[in-house]
Image 1: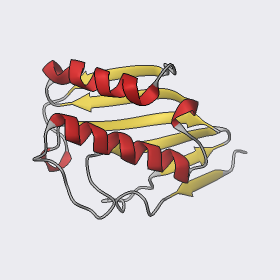
Image 2: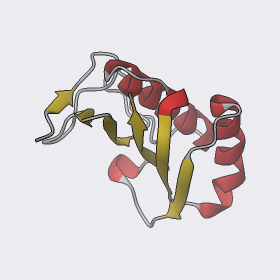
Image 3: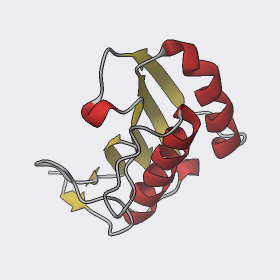
Length: 127
């Protein structure tokens, strides 16, 4: 049986619901959806899409590090945006953030995200 480890880090905002920042199952790490919220809990829902994206990527980095891995070990990334026309802005920031690493990815347009945010990212990585 696979041992499950629930991971939380002080470098991300405290979970706002009944979940952990990530869960390790075997050699896989499942990162919960990351919103543009600072580790102090400041919601950046009124910030520009670019600022929100940068905060989400920072939170994703911190969640990965807190679980014992890095962005270079990402296997799959799922991105939710409230305006698909901002895809190119996201893709530019994301490609600079990841460099040559290209994990599987999906980008989905949704009508609404928690706190009125414009972007949320969840991911799967390996150790």
